[in-house]
Amino acid sequence: MRILILGAGPAGLTAARTLRELAPSRSVDPAITMVSAESFPPYSPPAMADHFLTGREETLYWQGKDVCDRLRVDYRPGAPVEAVYPEQRQVLLQDTRYLDYDKLIIATGSRLHAPLDGYDLPGVYNFKSLAAALELIDHVKHGDVKNALIVGAGFIGVEVAVLLQALGCAVTIIEKQWLMPNILDEETAELVRHDLEHRGIVVHEHTEALRFFGRRRVKGVKLVNGETLHADAYVAATGVKPNVEFLEGSGLDIGWGIRVDNRMRTSLPNIWAAGDVAETFDRMSGERYVHAIWPNATAQGEAVGRDMLGFSADYEGAERMNSMKHLGLPIMAVGESTGQDTLRRRDGDTLRKIFLDDGRIVGFRLAGDIRGAGTYRALMLKGTDVSQFGEDLLDPRFHISRCVSPEVLYH
Image 1 (cartoon, rainbow, N blue to C red):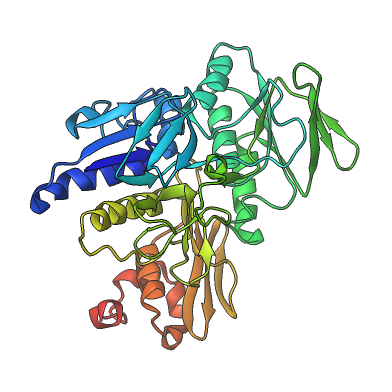
Image 2 (cartoon, rainbow, N blue to C red):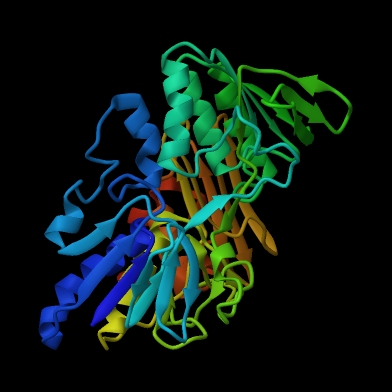
């Protein structure tokens, strides 16, 4: 059985590892080939900031640089995909080579989504790949870039701002709404803004960029209000989009991402999709969504490997869950950021908000003190009616309180 994996991120690598671990129990020994557009061994995108700050490689190459050798995977880096031909069971690479497969896993991740003119000018960087990030970091460390302007303050934009400031770069960040608007409510985002400003990062909220401008190289950013901002380097952090362009004409059912079922199967036989490229169901709402975070990618990769070998592989659905590791202020954001009712407690830089619909937790935001997050998440996923606990839910010690019995959480 020839298995071809497109992409070497957490979803693709987890699928390969699952296949190798489970294949002996099915008395099969699949030939696994993995291709990647990047020239590095499989790495962890969330670990890039830590790697640039500390130089450590063990977290960046989370399964080891030799993981493909250990898994007996024929790894082919620097091999972007041009097209997929399902009827022929072939994949065309950009270097005009064809690869045959019996079963295909598409785990090509996501790329920068920048709906701004000029985003592709030289001097505009992004952090959606190790190669792209390395170029900017090298310039910063060599002193060529002393100040940077980041357009977009989502999760990636804020992490990049903190990283560049820690490396000695003066940083300005602009965002047309508030910080991390897809993750945080405005009040929680205010605490993040205070933390960034305390570090010396200049934050302009409710400030919309119109375009990057320049001829041969970017010279500045034009704002909607007519102002112009300048820096030594510019970072586009305006969002991400699944890498699906090469699938045009393939016959796959594609929305924002590749639509899959609860076993990560696509609309065509012998093709699965996982990770940032897969449009799955939200675990709470049931709506289709691309949940581009690490835990979802690894869970989906495992589900693909299991289903491909005929094991039970029902995927329970993706979650919305983020945590900020590099801020001085710990942040945990899970689920929705609104609800029919809100429980709220604030004490200085500590904020706890729990959002409820019909007495059930649909999301929560914790800042400054993230104790209880595990309990809240368990209650949310279980759909437990927590109305009986009222304001007691906001107690950081709630997760060890005797008012929550094991029967409530796990039965």
